[in-house]
Length: 394
Image (cartoon, rainbow, N blue to C red; front, side, top):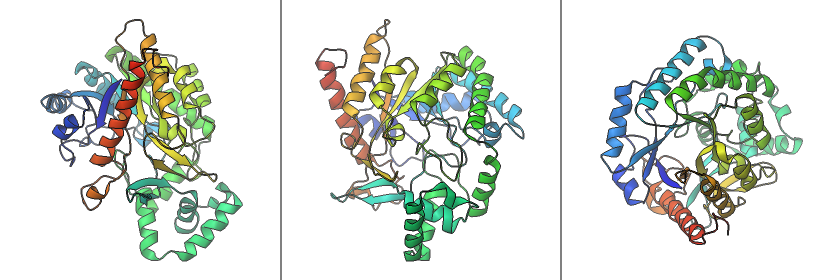
């Protein structure tokens, strides 16, 4: 497997030199200075790539070329924006980059309610608390019909919790949910997110899935010409937020997408934490079934709770079988007849260790020490399984 690291560009407080010292050989990055919907010029791509290569690393995956909401809703200037997307893929292919991660989540990207969840060892993790989210949705945002989206016990819990929060706590919760997390696609104010939700409310799951399928059919010719694998990231969390549709939360969702768009360029980012937040997703079975489609992996772990809440545990702890998943992915690589296949993986959402908690430059989930710890643990698993000489099987 190819060990990679998420880098947010020259303004990232973690340098390329530090990434190399952590042991990664590949970089996962994007051109965040280009507005969503605009063409990525070849010269900008090549400049960014050269910056990475000058540090002795490889730009392995683009995460991501974000999708404008007009594309997701197939409204407004979506045809123009799709044309721009096609041109960007052609330029990325010309620069020799072959993997592009993207997502089709409506309104909000990956979402958490607590960015500093304190663990017993005093490190901090990311947490999604369904009651806190309901507090915001029902009592702060006051979305029409919001209470119908939750079990009665969650609504009552949210009512009680809301009564205990002061203005500062409410503001912090709102900031965590709608201000935009690292690698996301923008932020909202309260009026803006209500308008965006209303715009997407016209779609149920199947209608929204058809928009995703239509987008892929539009761009697959360009992706195939550019020799690019479009690897969709699953919904995070993998269930509805704000009553909005979800179209990539389960293995069945992946099957539907592959069946509708069978092009070899239609691939998958297997995010262990996103898919694994649902207890009915078997990650090992998904790796085995969709192995030929998986070109990028986010390896992180979570602890699930009965009401749908979860927090992000250490990489080798939690409810996901990370060792089994790595073994399945190594078996996928070993089965490739060319002997050249290496699936890019990155440690995801490392804990914030005490030494970094006061750093104002820290991006939640993207600490240096926590991800370096995760990468070291994952590297140990990979080396141990490989040494067994059984195609990745323990």
